[in-house]
Image (cartoon, rainbow, N blue to C red; front, side, top):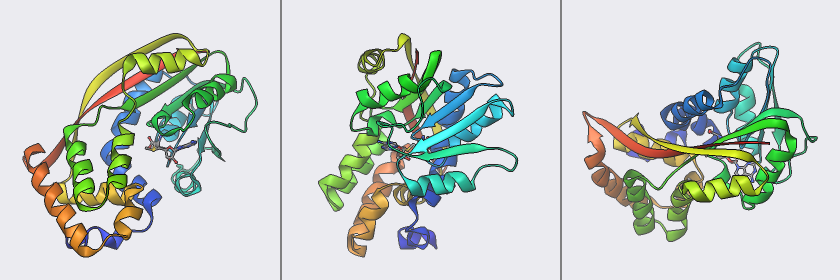
Length: 269
Ligand SMILES: C[S@@+](CC[C@H](N)C(=O)[O-])C[C@H]1O[C@@H](n2cnc3c(N)ncnc32)[C@H](O)[C@@H]1O
């Protein structure tokens, strides 16, 4: 059984696990909210920055239709390989392996830039936002989302990694939820030249699998997979025990319930 082996029977391929577990459990619900907020029109040219395995790009392609176009950009070639393999038949999405801070595309190419759960990871957020501005046509729009602050469920996960593995691994969890202050986000976007910046937030309730299943789904979908590969079974067993115990308070009717605040922001070039 998966549960007794710390998820090791699907370990080793985080981008495939990301698409298989993280996307249906967390990425897709947030992507459908983002796409609704972006209000794409048929025929628009869209770039999905930090596209990962392409969940936002695929939804965007449905909205812009055959007269529009969608491209995805990510710095991780493993994520892009899965993205490429997940494109539905008859849909054409261009993929670019590049850093968000140095986009290898001409000025004024896109009507819309989308970025889901990406900005918090960029080392130079101002440079990345300037690049998004540069590749938009005048009047084009940026639409992004960011989760945070760290929901209590993930605070428990981060603490368990700190207690059972190391402080460094706990930091990954915290980074995911590190950029959530609406004024700071507005200032970052405006600071790159965007006009009429709108920032809003909502709280999303997501129903996840059982604590033990979700723990290993999440770990093996993210850079934490590398951390647990280097840990021994005793550490993993303690980690699992701590997390599963702590997460009982978030279980309703056998499902783990994640309540997460999500900031959505838009700005015009
Ligand atoms: C949490 S994932 C989000 C992926 C996707 N947007 C989604 O919603 O599923 C963060 C993504 O940001 C990418 N990323 C991190 N830093 C980057 C950078 N500097 N340039 C481009 N992509 C980056 C990672 O490779 C990863 O695919």
